[in-house]
Image 1 (tube, rainbow, N blue to C red):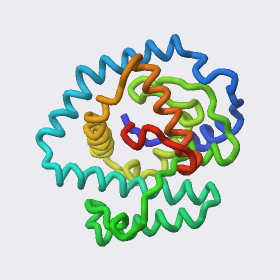
Image 2 (cartoon, rainbow, N blue to C red):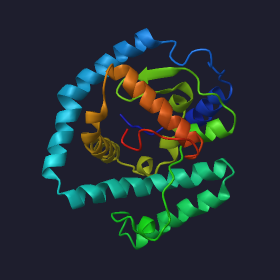
Image 3 (cartoon, one colour):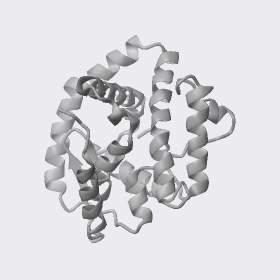
Length: 231
């Protein structure tokens, strides 16, 4: 199955999200259902995704692993350029474009993060953050099968972000989906060590991590982040 959304779906998601009310009264009004979906995701992760990520981490030399992560981060600069521009932050959009150009050329297709070495720091921007700048409320916290927990606003922003990703422009469906799978596996492998930080109720801990990080992201880092970038 193709992961590529059509332009009409992109517009539909945009209009639906802009019309979405703000469920400020309760962050997690669907907690009972969310926990069931979370449990399903945990089983899938425990028996399939996490073991695969461990094998990936074991067979990949650290330098190559870092290169793969850099490659996908560089592709993500396209989203950073577009979303920064949509937010009216043309200066940041230009910085992201500069990072994309430098790392794609001097960094050999993004395998090396030369831009950071040159003092041009990365700042991730997604369509959920763009909608927040446009005044769209967070919405309730929901847990999606396979994708995990996020605000409703950010869940509806998945399709637009996928639409503008260069990964989605690969014509062959099998190749495109395989690239997405490698990206997700690389990301999961990068999170293996961070799991040691989880304490108490796993569902609540991960939910609060997400909420904290989205607060930091939508404020462009202008709030205290107690957890860093590990989750």
